[in-house]
Length: 239
Length: 306
Image (cartoon, rainbow over all chains, first blue to last red; front, side, top):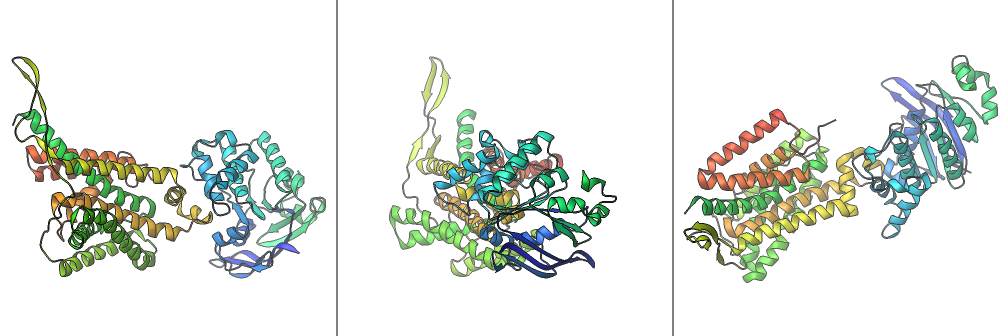
C-alpha cells in the first residue's frame, strides 16, 4: 500500500490552473523525484501535500488517512516533514536551538538533547551546534534544514530543491546522506539537478503545465521523448 | 544639602523608578516582540496590579497579605489578559491596526470598571517591612577625608527591596527566555510566526500566554511600587507613557535594549525631577524619543526591519 496517495489534486490561482488533476502514489521506502520545467506546478503540488496551500479540488491520503483538510502542523505530527525551497531556518537562533524546535513535538524531556545531537551528527553539523544559524555558510544552512527534518523522525521527508546553491563537493556529500536516510524513511525530492535525480530516485514523476507528463524509472524517463520535449529539446533532461 | 549628597539621593529615587519601569516595559516589549501587538491597555494591567494588591492586603492583614498579593495580583491580571487575548485579539487575527483600537477600548473598560467598583480614592498599601536608613557621605574637610551623615540623605529598606526584586525578576525572565524550552518557542514565534507554525508551535497558545505574561509583569511592578505610590484608578497613564518611551528608545521587541533604556530614562527622570521639575524630565524623555525616531528608528538595540 502506498504511504502517500494523491487523487485529482487541483489548485487555481485567480483563474490560472497551477496544478490540474494530479494523481500520485508513493510507496513506503521509496525515493521519488519530482521534476519538471519552471512553472510546472511542482512547488504548488508539494505545498498542498504538506498542507501549506489549500487545494481547490482533489484528495490527499497519508498512511490510509484522508488529510486533505488537515493543517500543516497536524500533518507534521502524523510524520510528514517538509523543507522549503527557500532556506527555512531561524537565523537568529543557534543550530542546536533550531533542531530542538523541530524535534520537540516528537520527544520530550531529557531525550530531546540526545535526539538533537544525533540529528546534527547525521548531517555532520555536530561541531557547529552552538553557532548562530544565520552565520553558517549556505551549504551548511541547507544541511541544518535537513537535520531539522530528520529530528522529526519523519515517515515522509519532502525536500524542495535541497541541492540548490550547493557546491560540487557538497552535492556528493548530500547524495550519500540521502542514500543513508532512504534506509529508514520515504523521500519525495523536488530537484532540478538531473545528475542528482538520476543517481538517487527509484522512480521519477515529471510535471509540465500543472499535469503529470510521465512517470517511471530513471532509465525509462531518460528515454522518454515527451519528457525531452518538455525540457525544450531535451538537452537538459539528458545531461 | 550639598550638591553631592543631593545627587546621590536623586540617583536612588531614579533607580527605584528605573527598576519598576524596567519590569513594566519588559512586559510591553515582550508582547510587541512576540505578537506584534501594541498594547495600549498595558498601563491598566499595571493599575490592576496595584488595586488588586490593595484588595488582597485588605482581606489578609499583615506581611502575609502582601506576600499573597505579590502572587495573586500578577496571576489575576495575567489571567484577565489571557481572556482578553482569546476573546478579543485572536478574533482580530492580531491585525496590528485593529489591535491598537481594541486595546484602547480595553483600557477604558478596565479603567471605568475599576472606578465603578474600587472608586476614585487613592488608597495606600503598607509595605510588609520598612525602615529608614541614613546614608553616609564622604567629605574632604580640614583633617582629610571623613565620613559624614548629612541630614536628609537616606532611603528606605523598601526602596532597596524594590530595586533588588526587580533585578531578580528580570534575571529570571532572561533565564526563562534564553534557557527554557517555552522561551525557545516564544523566540521562534517572534522570529517567524509562519515557520514556527510549520514546526508545530501552537502559535495561538503562545500568544495568549505571552499576553498574560506581559500583563503579569506590569502587575508585579505595580505591587512592588504601590507601598510608595498608592493605588488609584488613573495610575496607569504614566507607566504606559514611560514604557512606550523606553521601548521605543531601546528598540521594539529587544529585551536588553528595553532594560538599558529603562535605566537611562528612570535615572534621568529621577535626577531631573529632583533638580529641576518632573515636567522637564518628561519633556526631555519625549524629545529623546523624537530624536531616536528620526535618527535611529529601529531603536538603540533594535534590528532594522528586513
